[in-house]
Length: 475
Image (tube, rainbow, N blue to C red; front, side):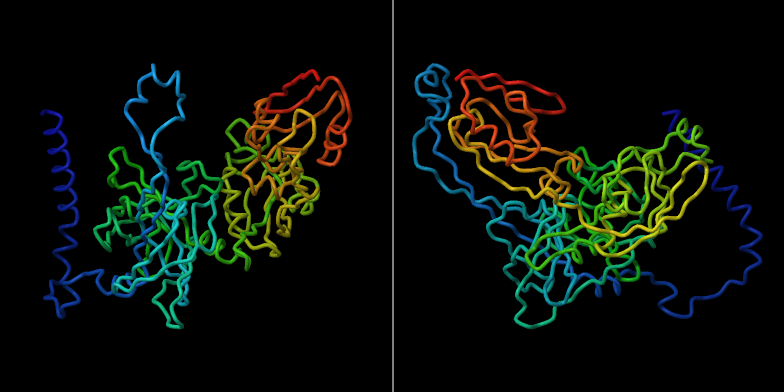
């Protein structure tokens, strides 16, 4: 109770002092009666009227099959005879519904939302603010950003849309509106400010670089619009920080520049092509900055460069510190990835590098991750331990596609057929086959050749989770 009183009087004293200091200014200013309604009424209504029609409600349906269950088989006594998978009844269909929001970004019906809103959906319906309803087609999804692109058939009619802003122009403290469909109650508008920028420790996605806002965002707002007072889309609302499931004033949105890059990077067949730097590193801490002669800790210290990639071609070396890309400062690997991802394949960008206590200006020509060697996806067959495994050659392009380290080289197991020798011997998807019977494996063709040899004993050398393992099989 005392603590509360102390806070109250402290606040009262500060407020009173501030009023007294401003008193002379207020007294000096001539008091005027408002001359128009606009001078006494402040409202977001005109902005909402212009932007809300471009924000849609998304209803996704997924049909799952469940086998009929009998409580009898919960008893361990019966499970030991019939097994865990045994049950009565035919598989039955169950409909699972999810809801979210989306933003029309092109008048022809191109819509952006979150990937998790439409994940696994068999049917996607889009409802506009004026209650028009459309069936949507999934154009593409991007797990790295949690974005999805939908298309609706408008019958040749133009739909209301939101223009994408340059989200790099945002500043902490800017006013924004969040528009979406929280809890399925219908379109809702909330207001707030930009609380922070460049948040990189929010989710586990690869391209983690969010706008933080205190505008109320709740479940169902996912995929909705974060709008500037200029009436443009500055971000797509995607995640909240909450222990209860409700808004606590900490919401995150994917910047509009990333949304634009995803849309512009789409190919005609729904694939997404991004540029790849071909270099990785670590944040520069205080001790590293001191040893390198940097004025303050900033940038990314490069510890690996892929031969032939964009970074190597531009002249980046191991030990360099990348300070800025395309005029934007980068302070960690996530920020560097984001900046690369917002650029287009085939474009060039200035790269600022710290080397030997000097700042160098390099020119980066952006290219997609190379797919060399070709993946050569192959199902292994025959009387050998890896029979039934689907393998492929690793390359930066393929590794990024399957969510693995783009610097990984060699032959990887990408799938396993049930009941086959490889499956029974407990090989796993993601295992890297390094050797067979003492001979190193460099590619799929070589692996097939080694496995075709007749022998009475097999020794398979493979890597799993950074550890090298050996499996010996007789006969």
